[in-house]
Length: 160
Length: 160
DNA sequence: AAGCAGAAGATGAAATTGCAACTAAATGTG
DNA sequence: CACATTTAGTTGCAATTTCATCTTCTGCTT
Image 1 (cartoon, rainbow over the protein chains, first blue to last red):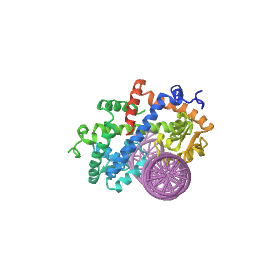
Image 2 (image 1 turned 60 degrees about the vertical axis):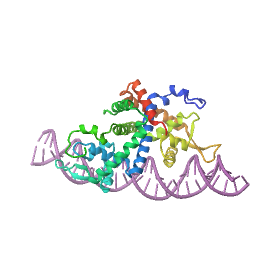
Image 3 (image 1 turned 180 degrees about the vertical axis):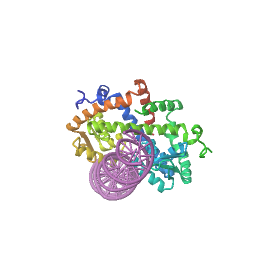
């Protein structure tokens, strides 16, 4: 087919399954995500000493209208397993940035809330993160492009 | 500001830093990537018993014009640390899908190549992966949308 | 009201990954 | 040519995450 070593150009990729347009798109998405999360994570860690997954948890909680989320909601929102979320919240709680409180209507559930210390850290981190995002994203993509990207990603993200 | 618990609607997010359009875009990218790589990884693992990171390595090697890549090139292409790449290639090599061979022009470098067994596995995996990608990506995004997404991600991915 | 399927969260064990430190080899500089 | 610097790759160690399993609790069904 097109797998032989004697082919030395890259032109064949367009007609070869491994160069399939859809496969390369997925690869590009993965690569872009990996590079961006590395850059933003390292920047946030250096500027605020806050791991990106911690920031993500604080962000989700801040965005929650009630100011609290259950472990399951957090696991879904951050795309972690429930076991992973337990450990992650353990660490953030040990650092004093969030607290677990019992849910009044369901004794199985835990309400995770931000502490005052968590709010302080989050606000500083958000300011820093915004600058990093400006450099790595907004300086590369115009507002209309960002809007388009948002729409496309939202379509990809729809459940089923 | 806008951080008080008494706000119960989500309308304030648009005027609040945590709801900043750029921050939510990055969050959406991370979330989409996480969900997609989970879905595709689980599907590939189930159908071909091949971890997604292994598939990525085989794909990179197959795309390489020379049929081989050094550890460093592989580390960069797959966005892993060099240490992580050493371990990853160790595992794939133990499974017999790739092999290390010495580089004739640089005695420090290692050429990683696909074995015949690796090619067999890769071809089956690629067929399966293509089907999964069709379901999770191509059925959700038209060809022109995929092209747009590709361009936007490429801009985001540019180095600096 | 008794029982049961399913959900919420925690935990033990294992796998993966990154960081820092290290060896070996190539390159550049005096 | 000798020496310093940089690059390629590996390894010890630690941190993070997942999977499977377990306990507790809820809500439904009969």
